Image (cartoon, rainbow, N blue to C red):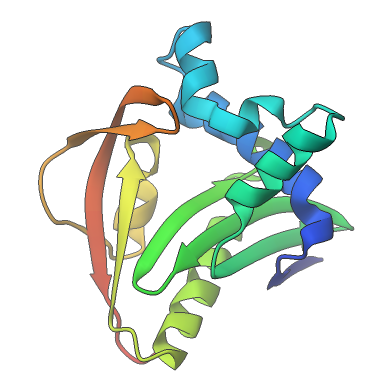
Length: 166
């Protein structure tokens, strides 16, 4: 059974590995190994036992609002955000197309409405554009070239959704 819940600090190792794997595989496949390391930032150390690496990963995960999707005691998805901004969404590759991302976004949208937010913005990666479009997010400009941690060359699509009462 799938459960959506708030993130806990004890989730940092699992969430860090999920982000590192999913981000690399689906969003950064264009990058050379050196570029990939720069684009992943602290997440390149997600499997490290080094305390400084673990803290760096945990620090990046922290956000005003973080939800995780948990199935059978295992974290299979994560959404990070703040007021008016969906910062990142990752679902484990073998769990794509099961409604997990939709449920995480719906939870974020409900919380946004509770906070009187009416517009949510997201910088969608090329891989994620069809997903957000299916959830009624609309492109606000053309593609942009952006950065991730120390790396550059990550293309993204600015998108937004005007919320109505759910």
